[in-house]
Structure formats: structure tokens, C-alpha cells
Amino acid sequence: MIGATAASVLARPAFGGTAPRVVVVGAGFGGATTARTLAAGGVDVTLVEAAERYIACTGSNAVVVGLRGIDAQTFGYEALARTGLRFVRATATGVDPTARRLSLGDGTALPFDRLILAPGIDLRFDVVPGYDERAAAAMPHAWKAGEQTVLLARQLEAMPEGGTVVISAPANPYRCPPGPYERASLIAHFLKTRKPKAKLVLLDAKDTFSKQKLFEAAWAKLYPDVLEYVPLASGGAVTEVDSAAMVVRTDFAEYKADVACIIPPQRAGRIAAQAGCTDRSGWCPIDPVTFESRLVPGIHVIGDAAIAGAMPKSAFSANSQAKVCAQAVIDLLAGRKPESPKLINTCWSLVAPGNGISIAGVFRPTDGLLADVPGAGGISPIDAPDEVRAQEAAYGESWYRTITRDVFG
Ligand code: FAD
Image (cartoon, rainbow, N blue to C red; front, side):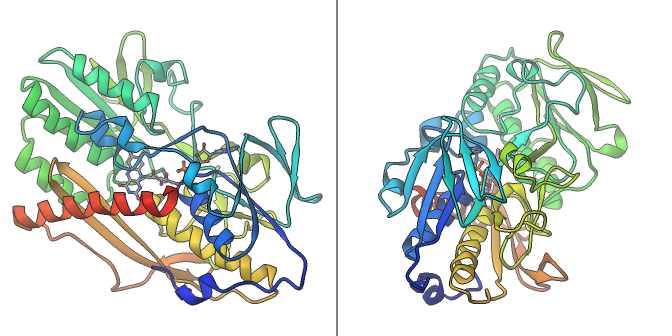
């Protein structure tokens, strides 16, 4: 799965008698994985997480259209807390990189030798005029799974026949590049089967996107009368929303929506900025071998918050990066030079229930960034028969079961 061998990942570190302390912030796909990998390597590790339970975004588009319940996305931290790490339920509120201390919301602080930040994303409510946190209660983003996901599902269920759904997808980079298109596909399927006179408009702030040919072929075949795609070149960028009137505006048109899902631009979770690890883009530049911040020595950043070159912001990527980062930290603490890694990402999407497509990539450090390994990885064939699409959907579901057991089980 990663460049470092299983043997080296599991090798016991030799720290010369002292016990260096590693603190990890965020128990999502990235942070939980890196913390348990470090604990398995004999490191004294404390994992800090604000939420009581983890609610996974991966698979949550199926919740939006009633194909599964939010319970299937929800994981407790009990099993993780028994893997040899120290689990602290608290919000990390600040970092002193010189004194190497992490402040917590309850007024206490944790000392560290190395800190790993895996806080995921914050949604930017300062970019699309009219789209603030209050507007999100009427026009859900559902880009952090939980209440927002359930709200969007309820709105779709309650929408009148013949209504209009508007989705807006942001410019790059953002969490889960194919996510908005999977969501559009599943909502189009929902409308086609449940509200056949309804329409879906997908407004996009860009002209190209992940698995585009596959999505567009599926839309032409399955949803020609339901889904209208409006790319940037045709005026897809949202310039304003009015959540009271349920109106979404672009430079070219005004859309009156019965249900509007606005996915706003994003940035690294706040603690990354508080630690000084974000650049002007709002994301965190990192060394691709160790995931150490390019801006603050001794702090590593993994998962969605990091600028990981060609690697997409996905749960699969976060899990791969977490293992590489843990091994690099073990090596650095032991005074060894970390090996240059190879990392993998595979991303499955549904274009309809039981109808899946995928893209896979292999990445390695090149010129200071994570770059695609040419010729490695691949994408589903455009003309695959239905049986292959059904298999891909099953592989995606089975990957979800495996990764969530790997991370939270
Ligand atoms: P997160 O999983 O968001 O975890 C961050 C954790 O940090 C959270 O638990 C949060 O509570 C905690 N935290 C944040 N700040 C603090 C703080 N200051 N103190 C304490 N705790 C804190 N990926 C895939 O690989 N496959 C898919 O099919 C897929 N589908 C998706 C579908 C949708 C609709 C969406 C929105 C995303 C999807 N993703 C998918 C992307 C995936 O969910 C993310 O890339 C992944 O969750 C990133 O992991 P992370 O560990 O970086 O962040």
C-alpha cells in the first residue's frame, strides 16, 4: 500500500532510552490512522479529537438520497482508544511551536516533540456572497457529514414534484474532487425514480473535473432529461445566493431552487492556520517525504489540510499519507533518514445505485511535490458492461468496510 515495507512500518524504534512525545490532532481518516500506526511502533502518542463520534463523508452521498442511513457513516472511538494510544477528547485551540506545546479548549496544554495535524477542512463562508453559516441551514453544503447530510436528505424527500434542485461545485482544490459529480448523479437517479418531473442543475466553477468523461457518458445515458450541467465557460460560477428567496445567481442567469446544495470553497482546518502552517492559499505546504510543514519545523500535516501535489483530498489519500508520515516520524525520532515513499489513492464513485466507476493513482516525491508515477494507476473503461460497473460498485462498498475497520475498528 505504501512505499515503506510492512516490516519497516512495524519496526520498533530505538529512541535511546527517552520516550519522545508525539501529539496528533484530529481522529479522522488521517489522524486516527497515523496515531494507531505510531502506537503500534511503540511511540508515546496522544490523539486529540473534538467530536464525540466520527461521521464519515465517504459514502454520505448515498445517505443524501436515502440509500443508506447516517448510522452506517458513524463510528465510535472506543476501539481506537484501546490501541495503545492516549485518546483526549478536546478541541486543540493553539500551538506554540517554539515551546512545543499544544493548547486545548479546557485551558490545559500538551507538550510534544513532534506534532501531527490532521484537522481536515473548514468551509469558507466568506467567499460566495450571501453564503454564510446561516444560509447553510437553508441551502446545505453537506460537505462535512452529519446534520447537514441529514438536512439535505430531508429537503430532497420533501421537495414537491416538478421542483428544481441546484448544486454548485467549487473551484479546485477541495475535499473529494469527484464528490459533487457523484452527488449530482445520485440525486438525478433519485429524481428520475421518485420525482420524474423534477430537474437538477449542476453549476460548476470549473470546466474540467475528475472522471469527467465517465460521469458525462453516464449522465447522457441515464439522465438526459433530468440533469443539466453548466460549466464555468457557460456561466457555472455562483456569484451570489439569496437563501431567504432560495435563489442562486451566476453572471449569466438566476436559478430559483426548491433545494439548493451549495458546496463552498474550503481551506485547511483552523488549527493549521493557528499553528502557522498555512500559506496564502489556506492550505499547508509539506515536505512530500515526511509530511513535515514547510513553514513550521517539528509539525507535520496530513490529509485534506495538506498540499499534497497531485494526490487528491480523499480518505484513501489521508490513510496512505498517515502511514508514510508515521514511519517518517518514527525514523526522525530515531535519528534515521526517512525513505522516499510511494503512495496510492483509489476513488470509487456511484453514477447510480449498483453502478460504479473508479480512478486510481500512484504518487511519489518529485521536485519537492507529490507527483503521479507515469503509467501507474488508471481509470474505468468508458464502455464497460453493466456487470463491470456493478462489480466496481461492490468494490467501493467493500473498500469502505475495510478502511473504516482499519481506521476505527
Ligand atoms: P477528516 O476526516 O475531516 O478528520 C478531521 C478530524 O479532525 C475530525 O474528526 C475533526 O473533528 C477533527 N478536528 C478538526 N479540528 C480539530 C481541533 N482543533 N481539535 C480537535 N479535533 C479537531 N474520500 C474517499 O477516499 N473516497 C470517497 O468515496 C469519498 N467520498 C466523499 C464524499 C463526500 C460527499 C465528501 C464530502 C467527501 C468524500 N471523501 C471521500 C473525502 C474524505 O471524506 C476526506 O478526504 C477525508 O475525510 C479526509 O480525512 P482527514 O483525516 O484529512 O480529515
